[in-house]
Image 1 (tube, rainbow, N blue to C red):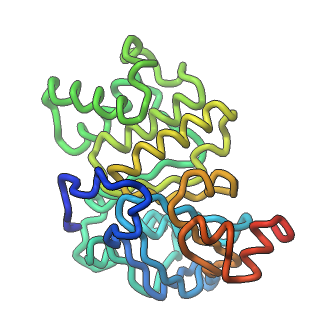
Image 2: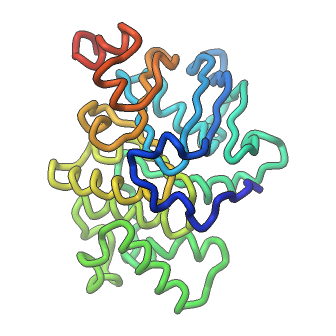
Image 3: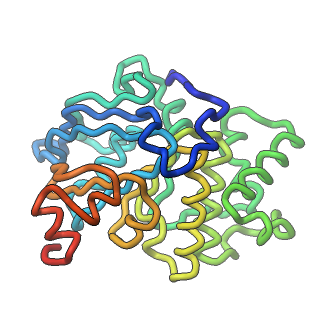
Length: 272
């Protein structure tokens, strides 16, 4: 089972300017990813800081989402997918044979591009994960649902609609509900695969503000096609191209003074 370290949040009150002092949460070394004979990722090496937002940018098909899914072994579900290299969380190799993958995915939650609430009530959507892990106490579930909806900035909008269908919520509300569903199982890491790409500007702004709040307590890795969004929400940015990591560093540096010409060309719109 994945080790849980620094529980209780000694870092939670750090100013966001101090994230450089945060410890490494996820370490990736010489990661190669294959779909059958097709090599999708080429020797990716990077360290992802705890309780910070890391954005993955790059043109479509460059490996961003594939890389994201290696961090909670979602690629395991794809026939013929395999990896070479090492991915560790809190120093534990998540691809080791004895790792409990269900426990890993509880620790590393995922929010997808298209909001995907279950055809159940708002309450049952959020309570689904805890129930799946054996929690049946009604008072505990009610507390966890309320806590998760508050953390996802949705409680005030749905507290009087908990037992109505989640399918009646707006797109932006459904996406925040999906985030609440992830939070309900008490993860340490949240992966987001273009979580606002299908939303209107107002809903996108709410998701970005939510990310700003969540990063005080969670490690967040977000794939985004929107460079302005990456600049607004992230502490670190990684630029991918054709399955390779071209450049990785603090977001301010990547966007104002990139080291690689390829990165500058993409950031400035001369390429991609």
